[in-house]
Amino acid sequence: MERRDVIVIGAGLAGLSAAAHLATEGHRPLVLEHHAVPGGFAHEFTRRGFRFEVALHALDGAGPGGWLYGMLKPLGVLDRITLQRLEPLYRLRLPDFEVTAHADVNEYRQELVDLFPGEAEGITGFLDAVKRVGRDVGGFARDRATGWKPTPIEMMERFPDMSTAFTQSWADFLSAHVSDDQLKAALSALWGYFGLPPSRMSAGLFAAALASYHLNGGYYPVGGSMALSRALEDVIVEHGGSVLYRNTVTDLEVEAGRVRAVSTHRGERYEADVFISTASPLDTIGFAGSDHFDPEYVEKMTADAPALSNLVVYLGVEGDLAAEGWDHHEYFVDDGYDLEAGYQTVVDGDFGRAGMVITNYTESDPGCAPDGHSVLVLMTLAPWDHADVWGTGGDLTDYSNNPAYVAVKEAAGAALIRRADALIPGLTERIVVQEIATPLTNVRYGRQPYGSIYGREQTVENMFAHRRSPRTPIANLFLAGAWIAGGGMSTAMGSGRTAAALAGRALAG
Image 1 (tube, helix red, strand yellow):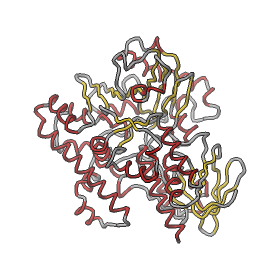
Image 2 (cartoon, helix red, strand yellow):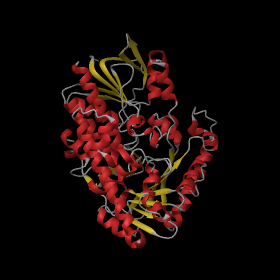
Image 3 (cartoon, helix red, strand yellow):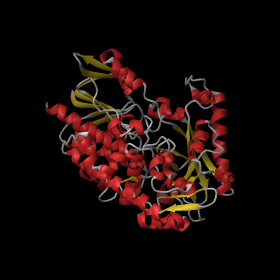
Image 4 (cartoon, one colour):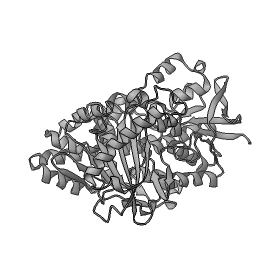
């Protein structure tokens, strides 16, 4: 193959976004992907007529005025997909009550005030603070796109709410506005989207996401996240780029402080002027060899703690659950109000009690199941080291056929099914298709260290000014993805855009 100006490692949303931005700007990127399909976590699989969404629950900021809308519209992606606006965003079941999180922020506020009338003033103040953080984040992103590089003092003066929130934990942010522990639990339903309890989670990250969902909408693409991945792939190819699948990068060839080429497990070698890696920083260092990096840089990347992974049960079931009354796209279940203790149940692998989410994808995307059937997905966070690395002792060789692994996986999945059956009576008897994914699955298909679904832990200390830079000590090698920007599909695409901008400037000399 002829030499390309840019090579992107990984066809997850970060890599696809980077390549799409570069392609539409006149470059001819080549994307090399380990898997057989694009998308990373944004893809699907089918079983007996059921199409299963691997990971996406809702895209934030995809409506007009949203930051994701502003990114995808110029690429032409929004002309290729249909987005279904979610109303409500989700429903939360707690021990003593349920909460409907309406997409409209005013309806959501009224729902909360009706449940907690004594906290009415605090609820209003909380939501106003969330909106201010969201507006600051949007303004900051627009200013940064112009090349503005503020000092810390300038940041605080121009974007005070964002700057303050990113120095706080979510627990502290909540406590500044409301005092009722049950209300705090209700306002923190999405903590599983970030993988940390309120005491460690970045308030800026959580508030920005809430603002994006409530001000610019939560959406699900018809055809699932694969429709989005394929749309980005089409943009790349139609503008002269290429995506090669089943090409696992094994080496980066470094000469005189610059990457010259990549090699794949097929023995192929591809040269380029600039390289973007969406693999984890440690894997990227491994491709090149640690001797090409500062020891301090390698040590810093090695110190990154991976975020939690997940356990997912994919079910194809008889009956139209939405028509029968289970018309929730997203239904969160928490058995208590102490989210710190809830986090510990996840770490302990106590899947009979850990917070979980039940998603009826047929509600938002009816074509994913045969007529008269439904696709239901059960998900909870999960640790890598559960039951001695899921019964394998850390040896992943042919792990899916390891009887110990199968037993641990089946027991964990059964715990979630029992809990869902208590909420949807008769569910177990109606299961037609069942698949279970564990943290090891994420390593196999997504090449994610420790099966992490969010990359690096999204703590206060790791966010905002302390995020990992997309630049590396090698001048023509840039990074993108969750380990750099944080978890979430919208964030991944934003990370790809940032890497593309850096790569474009490097190509321009």
